[in-house]
Amino acid sequence: MNSYEVQYGPNPFKEYLELYFSGQDRQVEIGVYMLNGQIIDYQFVNLSFGSRNYRLQTDHYKPGVYIIKLKGQTIDQSIQVIKE
Image 1 (cartoon, helix red, strand yellow):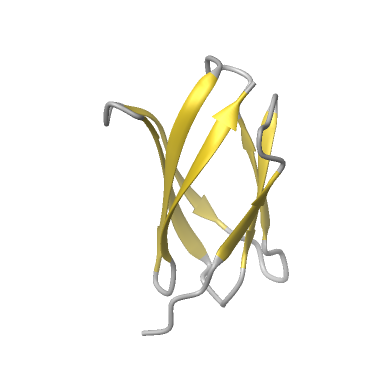
Image 2 (cartoon, one colour):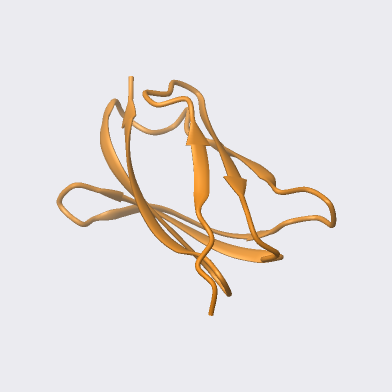
């Protein structure tokens, strides 16, 4: 299994977080967690053919630090981000 990296930005963010998935995954699970481990958002994303970007809407998140867990067939990554 190859493990591809997910690039993201901006960080810190306001209304959205842009995610770029390298590799060939067509389906990706996105879990957003508070630092205490409480999940606040979960999405199962189908990436359309030829598109490796996904815009995660975050306007309903409160300001703070979050852990985003990204999992797919060739992706398994956690990132720490800040909501302004």
